[in-house]
Length: 363
Ligand SMILES: *Cc1c(COP(=O)(O)O)cnc(C)c1O
Image 1 (cartoon, rainbow, N blue to C red):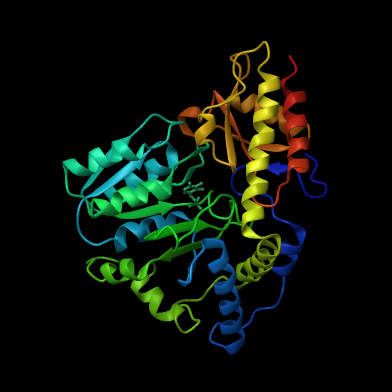
Image 2: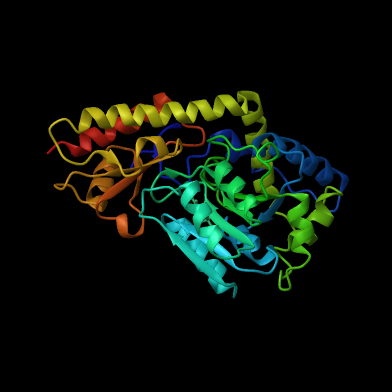
């Protein structure tokens, strides 16, 4: 397995991290109750505001993204929750809601598909829901849900919308304030291209107010508590300072690139993948994303293999060519593989990945 330079690692989480980011993380510690920390935290808030498209503060904790999925559910005000399921991660959101003792209904569509706002409206008209959960970019299938419309439909029916944008945020359009969103969470190791370990979320003022009614928010993931501290440039418990150094470098790079340019770069990578697939499927079955074209996520492609190839063996054959791609997820493990074209990858690093896949597929 060679790992020379940038552009060999296309797993859809964790994603490849640039050397300058890794190096920033070797800086010495600072006390987290200090002016230095408050200054760092304030700079992070400004960069995250750009990435989320918000004036609201972002909560940052040491956890994988699942931590804030649990937080979203625990902090949502009492009432029934409708969980939109279309893959492994949105299924996890439903499981978390159930495990937190909430009354949950699942609205499931087949993996690879997205949720249609009209059908959602119909579901929401049949029963009263306090909140819905949805995955923006469903990383197991590469399907992109229309979260803006979904959130609007939920609001019209009096429900809050809890959005998992772990592989969406930073790689595809999301505008927290303009779209009047309630709660959006992400993790560091997907489209933000940082090492794993940070969960980041933004909640609306209204959501924080309503969270006050939730009886069992716990302590660590309580957004009412996080909100109190964030206002003073602080955090309730010891933050992962090294990861925050990395985040600072990454936010500077994202701001310099321009968030809309970043979204465009991801869309270009998804298009390049589709163009390659069109060529690959000439004369052979498979080589198709399982998400339809109009719902394909710009950050991750889940690709059906031809029947002669098996998931794990194919992923190993690609690795032998010096490139890591992702195995299929859950029940899609044998029949698909995944390319995480997100974070700091470009159409040209992706071309190397597609070439390695093509060579691995030669019978
Ligand atoms: C990776 C991922 C998660 C889980 O993130 P962890 O950091 O592993 O907890 C949740 N949702 C989506 C859409 C993801 O891609």
